[in-house]
Image (tube, rainbow, N blue to C red):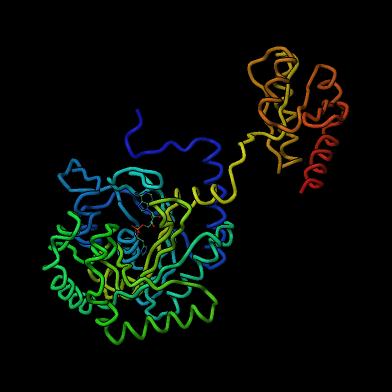
Length: 422
Ligand code: HAM
């Protein structure tokens, strides 16, 4: 039985994942971000320090294990802390800037539902060593370009906020606690608990009553320190210059403790409750918190499952056709020669996918399989064809007569048809 919260990605969907991921990686390449590949297993300490003890992720969502040396390990719940650790440990943050991305599975023990899984995948993008709003703006521009490349730009909305310096946040936190303490009775149970541990998270509570309790309460913008205000204004000016639309959301606080200043999230209305497809922000304190030199940084991570769901919702899902050409072998003794002939064809028509029938059987049954496979063409190899270096090409979706052709002509015909279709 599959473990709860895990997903099997089967052929049709896996193909769409590959298309979606490679479209995004192409964009990242064009922005000159470099890929890093990072471990899935890290120490628990990395996340309790980096992401924060009082966050949901560390408090209750990590998959932890003790290894044979008694070390407390966790399957990574997110990629930023590991990325900061890796670049610092490999001396890549000393006196240099880095713009990198990573991809792969993350693990969180959350309540599974559509768009929320216990193993999910992210493409994460991080920039280190750059403190100005220019890099925040580039990251957001990069995000917009990703959505454009996937044809989903019209379906997403950018939400933006600044959560300032740790000191500003601490002052706001006190004010918020002071405001909510007398209104505790109207908070939902989660928020009541958070009032003591992580009160800022109450701001993004979905409970109506809690939201009402927050109305007219302290506003973060009144606590923002001057340097953060200036940074935020700089970012908004750049976004205006780039013609990038956004909605300011003063209640956007994010669930991880390492953020400072800009935070942002792309959301969609097409996926129900799990509408955040991508989120991130600046985290100027993280590298130092993990033991490195103070290094400004910013980044975001895309939820691949959610982006694929959105892509499917927008573009529809067409059935997976595994092969373009289904090759039938009329007698068992001809199989070796047919495999060799098809291999020559693959080299001559590299854009096409050839599947060779396996397991023998009558031609009629092989053609039935060919038809069911969804392939456009069947290619038949009989004794005479093999002897003469020919193959019989049959258009399974049209009315044209079957034709016996030399292999080079088969390739030319298939390439030509392909070209004509495109
Ligand atoms: P996050 O908001 O926790 O941020 O996750 C980023 C994205 O991952 C979410 O917007 C969502 O699309 C996806 N995601 C999160 N949890 C799940 C889940 N259980 N199932 C499916 N998708 C999920 C981070 O992880 C930060 N490390 C982002 C970042 C990078 N900040 C700076 N750099």
